[in-house]
Image (cartoon, rainbow, N blue to C red):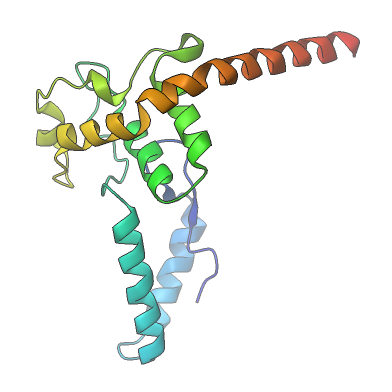
Length: 176
């Protein structure tokens, strides 16, 4: 079997992994050509079932990051909200995902707000979603998890850290 499977971290578009290059598609097709029904052992199948079950349990929303739900008339960056939520629940750096949510989506650092609490339940996104996700309901969960008090409390230290890093880069640039 191919080793890379074409799964690489996404560019922040909502999907935690993406087949991002034709070479990966070719590799995956080659793998499929060699796979025969009944070629996996019972242990291998059990392992796959275990991994799939764990993944489904941790992944709170089945968003693929396709973006069909966008643009939101109220400014919610739906794919990014779901991407950060998925990464958070999958156990990927809770603190960093919370900080990214605050900085990227809550309007910190001069960015345009795109956080989940902006959702007004208009339903436009649901009509366009090929995954049939109940987007407004899921956005409420994202807002509760990532947009709450903990995130707001951690923003001032992150803001200070960000500005300190910017100043250090300017000083370093001036010394070169």
